[in-house]
Length: 349
Ligand SMILES: [Mn+2]
Image (cartoon, rainbow, N blue to C red; front, side, top):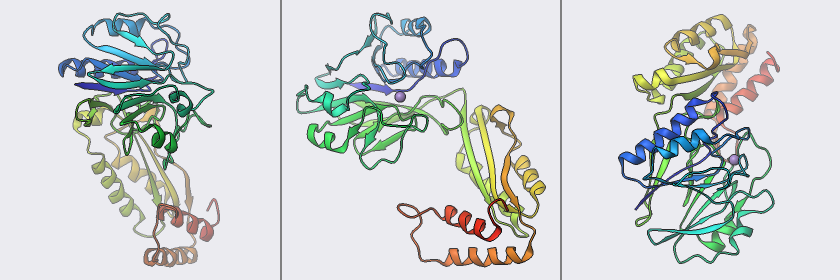
């Protein structure tokens, strides 16, 4: 049996974010086409400001064959079966154990006062069981929800070792992530420019444990790129090649391109800021910028001092030749170059 999982739809009041409702409809259409009859929404189905649920109820009514199982998240902690009404809508406002096709699922609604481990104590699921929750995972994961500082209903690696769920599906982090047997499906439509790339929902086979990502046709695809400019006579040419490479790496279809909203930033040091701006405008001319922005060169400084340029070239060559493992515990190569340049040119050029 296949079960679909999403989270963090952030449906809002009013009509200001139709793309989020459309992403949900997109998921339900896709499930209907595949005869998938269960959709799990792992928290933050609604945004904080949302207090009218009729539009969501109307959507659910159109898919009576799909049962929708919802846990509250930190944005919608007060939703319950008494406020959202529908034959096929089930909201878990307290921890619950449910069986789908003989497999146990533990639904943990968001709690501001306890971690997931503390809530799991009362359950002794069968041999194989699946955890549905909403919060932060602490176990070799640097990713946090960038909008929400602090810790939200943590799940620790020791909880996983103690309770050994077969699979874990969590909401809260909007970036799609997979870590061992733990999955964040991510928001099905980017909430803003910081949620980049194509979005997905997950399909989980309860018999085999196989999990697949289904790409969504969202109304918008956000994309961001940052370019580090290093001053010399080839700076524009190098930037153009770099930018064309990034566009190719997006692997957008013509239809994707129309839906893309981009943000482009150049940093570093240049002898001709106008030429850099011109180059970025030309290379990205076919794309729409988010909020009708232009390429951002506010952190691109002027480098006209030839002696410093010579020093910079030599330093960059030395960084290139360095026997050093960039990334991981060490800074990324780009950070090393940026820091070196700021020493040579002085912060702010
Ligand atoms: Mn959340």
